[in-house]
Image (spheres, rainbow, N blue to C red):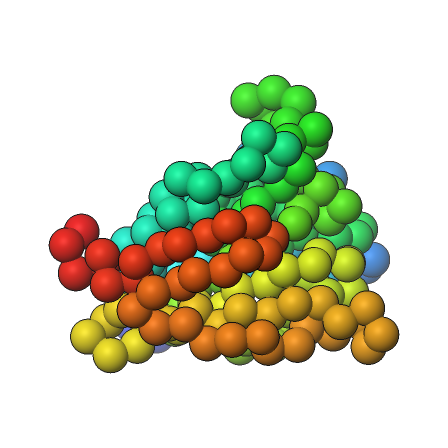
Length: 202
């Protein structure tokens, strides 16, 4: 296929055929075997989702929560950052932070975890993924039975505000159990105490 000249005078690259979705949509196996994909590509509803370059706030807020979760993490759990969670054939989001059961750790070459291994997923809202973070991903996580979900928004003075949700087994949806500013103190899924103002000193 020949390259074509775009309206701004720059030659456009031909559309790569490997990026064209199959009729059934992409699957988790496709995602893990397409080596040309950018880092942190997700699979949502059978489609590939590419992540924009993240802001400093997003990176710091995610690090703050991941480090805080690790400090008090009990031996039967592990904390991971930006690792795929396989929720179904066409669903493999990559939460910013993930708490999994220790028995799910099978080696350093793991490229995904199963939904049944996940205890908590954390999504830090970014401008390019706000609707997915606030709406679609919580639906998918809840449907997969992941018990705890945190949604992290940017608050006053750029400090993270953590919206804590617990899966309601009756409705199969997440119920908001608290909104935490300045400090995040919880007893579930385990004892957690994170100074959210510490982002000021990072």
